[in-house]
Image (cartoon, rainbow, N blue to C red; front, side, top):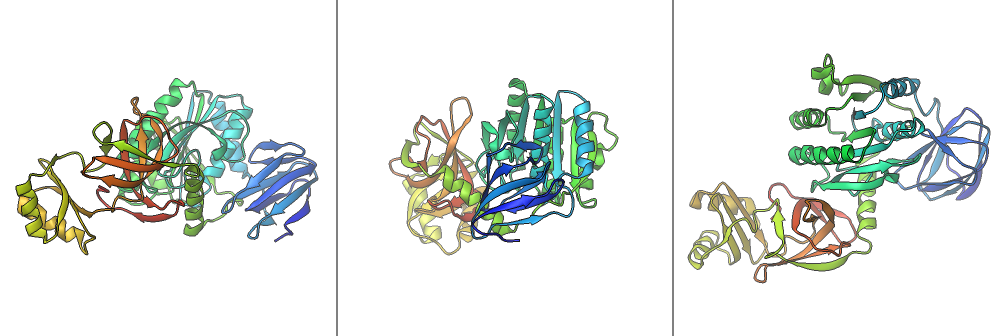
Length: 435
């Protein structure tokens, strides 16, 4: 049901409601629980746009609701937390620390909801709790295009309340084609969680569950992180295939739970809006900063991995393409070419150069094609310092300018495959080499 922008709602004892944002809720009377978190009298909870929050009344309760135009509150026909969730988590807690719980589920299966409830149960049990967020698309702990490690020190209503400890740059919102980065990054963050003394680590994964790449990714995460428990959230058997090799594997206990009735199916648009709000918030105070490519390395690019073309080679390339080349590099297996103006078919141009010079990797781009690419800023200790959006590359001066809130020294700039505008809107995903 909808409600007035400012109204009071009575929630009877034992009932469950779902609030869809944008809205804020303040408990005036009674006792509420949100995914295992007790809500205090006069405590306010915020529900952003494209999100929902389940409320469970422990006593007859009255809440004050301030709502946006798309917000609504509606009763749920069954409890927010399925009985199977209680039983399964009791079993996990009973196994004792250290606990490493990995969660698999399809899109809109409620993995994040389950992980939030699991975190609160771990807090209640007195564990030192961490969350390893391995979903670069619907990232909760840090910004999309990354995976991250967060520490949970008190009850939470969502995983974005975790305290960020470290993050690893993936460079896109889908792990497809980048499974190696996700697995390597997850292993690095996992080892940091161990050093931090985390007793109960929750490993949330993406909803990419079918196809060869998804199978390889999930098997890689299981092999690299060696969880004590694997929880499958399913409506039927939709992720069973990912756990089949581990059914009789003594090192990991496979557990199954149903999807909660509180789960809201989100459209692609809702997911995109959530990501773009995260980008916008992160880059709100960013400034343009310039880095010299003589002292700062680039990663995940062909650019800067070769040697500057000779005038003779540059002339050969111009003759083949029929275009003016403003910059070119050549490596033993690669060629990187920048032309003055946009070209209609860069793939065809690259193929011509591959055939002419016997190169395995060739990229032909135009001046300015780099604008908008997201980038990870890496420090001396190989840690992710922050994110940036590429503004411009000056090929003559060998400098790169980025929009970033990070002010310190950068050792490596990892170039991603997603393009954003300065307002955080997603423009395009680049297939293959971004630069």
